[in-house]
Image (cartoon, rainbow, N blue to C red; front, side):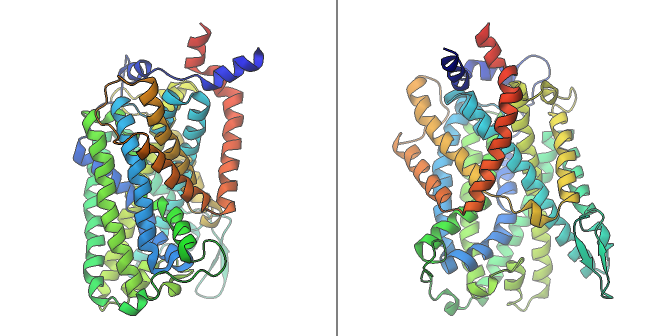
Length: 490
C-alpha cells in the first residue's frame, strides 16, 4: 500500500485551472508586457550566439564536413516539430516554467521535476560558460584598440597564464565574466520591458553582422572546398558519412535551443494564445535560414578539415576576404551574440526556478515577486551569484561547453505531452493546434531521440550526474513540501 501511495505521489499532476490561477494569482503577479516582435527578438537573442560562431566549424571539421548544412536542417526539423508542440501547450497553459510546467500538467510531478532541474542547471551553467568566452573576445577587442587588461583578471585561480616575457602567473578571477553576468542579472531584475528593449537592439546588431558575413563571404567561396560534400565515414560512428551528419545535428542542436527559453516567457506575454506560436515558430524560422546560409559560406571559405581544433573558425574564415574591418565586425557580432545568449538563458532559468519554487518543490523564498519591478528578483539574485562564481572562478575547460541533451529530453516530453493532453483534455481551448496528431508529435520524438542517441558517452554521463543530484534534492525536500501533494493529502 505504501508503494502504491508513493507511486501515486510521483505521478500526481497539477490541474490546468490551478496553473492558471497561480499565474494570475493574488498579490504581485508577473506582468504581461511582451508583444510578438519582442518575443521573436527574445528567441533570436538566445538562438544566434555561441552555437553559430563556434559549433558550426567544430561540427564541420569533426563530424559532417560541408554537409553540416544538412545537420542544421535536421536539427531545425526536430525543433520545428517540437516547436509546434510547445506552441499548443503554451496556448493552453500560458504560465512560466516551459517544459517543466507542461510536464507537471501531463505526466506528473516526478517527470516535471526531472525536466525543471535539468533546464535550471543547463541555463545557469550555460550562461557561466558563455561569459568566459565573452570575456576572451572583449579582452581581444580591447587589445586591438590598444587597451590591455591585467592577465590575472582574465583567468580563474586554477589557470596559469604565460606572460610576454616568458614568466607565468596564476589567474585571480575572470573579472569581465563576473561583471557581465552581474550586469545582465541586475537588468533582468529591473524589469522585463527594459530587458527586452536592450535585447532587441543587440539582436539587430548581430543579425546585421551575420548578414554582412554571408553577403561578403559569398563572393570568396571556393567550390573545391565543397568536395566531397559528404566525406566518407572513417569507420567510426560519428566521424563523417551519415552518422557524422547525425552526430553533427546533435551537436549543433545547441545552437537552436533558444526557442525553448521563449516558452518560459508565457506568463509575461500579451495574448499568449496567439503570440506564443508566433514567437516560437517565427524565431526558429528566421534563425534556420541564417544558420544554413552561414554554414554554407563558412565551409566554402576554408576547407572543413582546417577548422579542426580552431576555437574561432569564423575569424579564420573571414581572413580569406580582403577586408580587415570585417574581422572587427565579426568580433563585435560575437560579443553581441554572447551577450543576448546570457540574457535569455538567465531569464529563462529564473522563470523555471520561480515556477518550481511557486510549487514548493524548491523553497518558497525564491517565488517572491518584486512589488515594483514585477520580476522574480530573488531567483535572479541567487543565480547572479551562482553563475558569477562559476564564470569568475572556474576554467572554461572545467565548465565544459553547454550540452543539448537535456533540452532534447525536454522536447521529447513536450511532444508526448501534446498527445496526452489531447486525450485527457480534448475540449480544452487551444489558441494553436498541432496538425496531424499523433503523427507530428511522434515524428518530433523520433527526430529528437535520434539526435540524443548520436551524442557521445560523456554527454550522457553528464546528464546522469545532473539527474542524480536533482533526485536527491527532490526526495529530500521537494516531494515533502509540494503544494499539489499537500492539497491531495487534505
